[in-house]
Image (cartoon, rainbow, N blue to C red; front, side):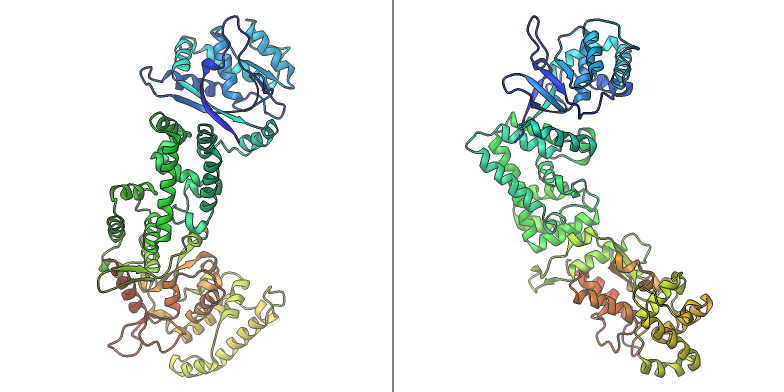
Length: 593
C-alpha cells in the first residue's frame, strides 16, 4: 500500500556542512528531461504569484517515489522528474543548498549537472550535447530571464509550497506506475491520493477495516445500474477507474471549475479538513455520502426522478441535488423538492401539442414520458413507481427521436438498403386485395411488386444471392413501388405534410442502432412494430412508452396494427392514433402535478 504525506522543500535540501538529506535516482525506463522554456516560466510565475500572507499550502503535483535503500533517504524517482529537476536548476542558480539528482544510465546528463553545481559555465555546451542537456539549456535560459524573481520564488517555495509525496512500498512497482502515469497520460487521481492519505494517517487497528470499506464502496460503484443514474453520459466520472471521486467531490464540494483550476483540489481539501477534523470523522462523512446515494438508488421514486433531472441537464451535475438533500433534512421534504424540480421542466400542455421533431425539448419530454409510464398515483396523491428506468442502458447506448410513420423512399440509397426494406415487409395479400380497388392500384403492377418482395425474402441475409431482377431494379421503378406499397398499407402519402410527419404524435424514443438503419427508418408501421416486439421478446431494453405506441395501447379500440393513423380511425367522435398518443404524453406527465 502506498504512503502519502505533504513535505516542504526544506525537507529535501541539504543543510550547510551536512550530507544531502535526499538523493533521487532517475531510472533508465524514464524519459529524459523535456521541459520547455514556457514550462519553466509558468512554474516560476505560479510560485511567485502566491500571496505571502496566505496561510494555506500550495501543493505541487505528486512526486512518486520508492526507496532504493530502506536505511537511507535515497529514492528511485518514478514520477515528478521534470518538476524536481527544474526546482534543482532554479535553486542552483541562487547557490542554494540542493538535493541530489542522478541518472541511472545517462552519464553525460550527470556530468552536466555536476559541472553546473560546481559553477562551471555549461550553457550551450558542445562536448556534453544530449537531448537532456539541450532542455537543461532551455530551462537555464528561461531562469536567467527571471533572475530578479528567483529570490521571491525561493522564499515562497520554502514558506507556502508543499510537495505531495507518494511513496510506493515495493520498488518493483515503479515501472508499472511509470507506464500508467506517463505513457498512458493518466495522472494520479484524487482518489488514489486521498486513499493513501487516509490510510497513512490511520491508526494500525483501523487501517485494515477502512481499507475493506473503501474497496467495498469502489466495488459497488462499478455497478452501472447504481452509478449511471447519478451522472450525465459525458461526465468526468463515467470512467470506471475514478468513480469514487464522485463521492469525494460531493463531500469536499469540488466542482468541475475547481478541478480545472487545480487537479488536486479534492485531495488538498481533504488535507485542509484534516487540520480541523480527525481522519475517522472525515471517513465517516465520506461513507455518509455513499450511504445516501444507496438510499436514493433503492427508492424507485428518487431513483427515477433524480436520474431524469441529471440527464435532463436542468441540474448542475449532482452537486445541486446534494445541496437540496442537505437543505431538507426530512426525506419527505426532499422528495417534494425533487418533484417540483421535475415539474418545472415540463412544458405547458398546448406547447407539447405543437411540439415538433426539431424542438430541442422533444427528446426530454419523451424521456420523462417513458420514465413516468410506470408511475401510479392513488386518490391520496401518493406516488409510487412500479419499475426503474434503465439509465445505465440509456447512457451507454445512443438514443434518437424516431418517426413512427414511414418517411420518404429517398432515404434508401443503396440496393442493399432497398432489398432489406423489401425483406422486412409484412404484406397480407388478402388485405392488399381489399385495398386495391379503393386506392386504384393496377393489379398487374402490384403482382410485379410482390414478385420483387418474394425474391428479396428468398435472398440470404448476407445478400450474396441477389437475383438478376433485383440487381437490375431501377431507382425510379423502386421509388414508384415504394410509394404504391406504402399507400396501400398506410394510406395516401400526399396527406402527410411535413408538420404532421414531424409532430410529437409521430415520434418515439428509440435505440439508435435500430433507428439509424435506413431500411428501418422507411419501413411501414407494421414492419417497425414487428422489429420492436422482437426486441422486447428477446429481452432487449425498449422504453415502456415506445412499446405502448407500437402495441397501440393509447388507442382505445384499435382495429388494426398495420399503420399509424393520422386521421380519425373510425367515426368523427374518435381521435386518431397520433392524437391519442399526444393525449397520453400530456396525461402521463400531468400525473406528477
